[in-house]
Image (tube, rainbow, N blue to C red; front, side):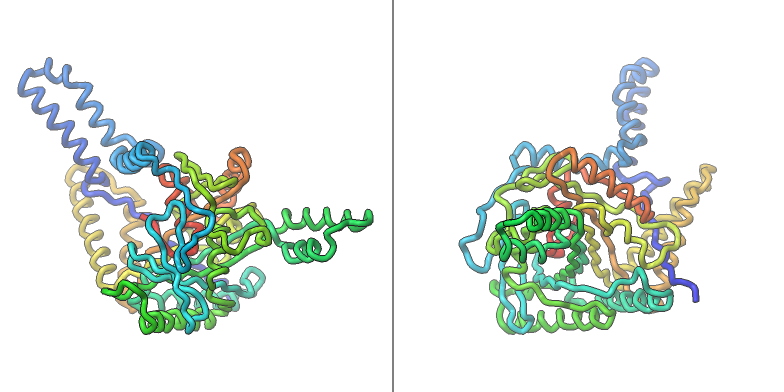
Length: 464
């Protein structure tokens, strides 16, 4: 039996006219307007005098910088300059919140409410700004790498049914699947040694202590979390018991679907578990037995153009710009979640209603057809990449008509290191691992703080 494979769609790069975005068309239109006014006003002399302006507009509209057009860079640079000017690139908070039932995180606007849900056996995180209620489950599976082809296909199909079920629950806003890889594979043995044999009275004991310390740093500890964000009940300032019970019912259905896919839900995180998970998002290099339970966040954070600092740890976050363009099996992400240092791989899935998805597909197809007609009118050859994007749209529409759901996926990868030099090494390593996984990574710039929080915080916050 052949191994089951999957084909990912391409990143859509369509524009409003000949592949150009509205911003590019505006700049080129501005350049043509300047040329027209200059020629009508002073002929060739006016054209020469106005050359710096219309040339600048033309170059800005046609030339890309770092894989982005100038109009695409404008909001990124504008937000970054505004943040630097107003001091929002640095944030601080108290070491532990004195108010029970609240979570104050540097870099996250507002105060998050933490509500205990007895029916769920864990806590719910209420975000009033986003109008969502989030619960986090710790899960584990038996793995898929060493399974035979039939078992791999069965597990992949079961996971597909989980994703399909998410599209049929309108209460679910977003789901985040988060895998954290960090040092600490021998954490239990190391902690037991510290508690029972802290004093090394012999050479053998000292040698064993050194081996445990070395093993702690050289072996990887993996944690898998699934965060589910559901819509907050409208018109309620506080989450009532009945509303929490209804949300728990939705989350229980998600847990049943995960169990059916051979993914065991160990627990829904309680208060201490949530605090520990949040702190590890900021300080993934800290040993789990060295993190106080009440400490939910570092004292402060500082954002730079292409990196983020939290306490004593430096982070860099990447966006998965392109998934594999060729057919791959279910284990294609293995290089990214292997023993490659401290990193977090986060997949955010947002269900798209079928009507909205069909409307987007048909609008995109109409834009492609109009663009194709314009190309034929001027004699321009169609790019093969555009043909592939149209084929992806046809495939998506056929799947929706057949009754399948549509999900908007975002992949984020965050790497961490104790200093800048080792962060650079970690970035080179993750880029090499992404190439092995046939994924194209783009390092975020001007958005490192928001990117790292979306990638590493198990709160299903999503990205913009």
